[in-house]
Length: 395
Ligand code: AMP
Image (cartoon, rainbow, N blue to C red; front, side, top):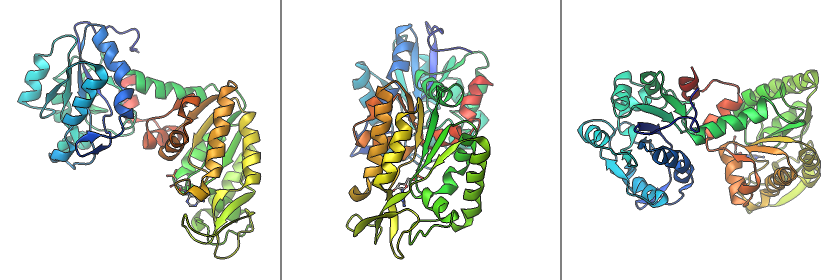
């Protein structure tokens, strides 16, 4: 396997799949986290004496050129981040891209227009992938957010580079962080799984059960477990069709010797609203018409204790409706406990859109060992699935 540190890009034209899918408002980048994340990979290519051809999608143009979803403003922003000029091709394939890629000199960067202006990108069209491949002579995949998609630029294009393909620093970092958690964790290993529904996390739970020492379940999905055990869940979000599944998970945990921790109390509200009346209740005694929207103080204390004695932590999904201020405390407390455990030497990985948003919102991201950049991709990876974008490089 080639790696960024051992590969020399001297005299090479690197075709790099990056994730420049950044939020834009009035043609300006409003959050450049993803653009900053690819800088180390680009700088290494340039420092070696190579050139970089960057390709990405932006938004959902659905196979048509949509001017508002042009990558041009992102390319301009990237120029500021890199401190150098960045060239731009007005289409990702065709004459302009071919000419600019051909004339690219060592040390130069070219950004191609939005890949998803062509329906062939998401269709994984081999001819389109070949047209992209034609632009460079080594392929680097540095886009974790799309690694679970078998698109032309993430997967199919790699076939044209049987000997010259590698992960960029960002994607390698994501792979290494999951490996630290799932393959060779320092124990105890604790997974904290939250979010709205059991149905979206069921495969993650199944995969984690066999590997973890502790699994903490919070968020809306905990209600289904509470009801499955015979509790009163009032008007809480419950997936009635998954009660048996929840019972099976509890049984499996017992068999695997995994300690499953469920909330014992909850912050309840009489409406799904930031201005609802609120109270605390035992998790299995939510009054009729009320709903559990966060874990309660007793659960926070118990979850904190488990987190603080863990040496490896994986967190996916909020403990409550953290977008509304009255239901934030559980998620804040868990985020803080994960940060504290990390300060004391534990390894922590936070993955999945909402928990990443939470650690950023609460200003704790720099006290977490690794904050993942891929929501859906991370979820599939934690389910134990082989991601096409990863398999295309390693396979
Ligand atoms: P997910 O995308 O499955 O990780 O779920 C994240 C969403 O779950 C967030 O938007 C939260 O507001 C929501 N959520 C967390 N706890 C609850 C709860 N107790 N009831 C309803 N929704 C919740």
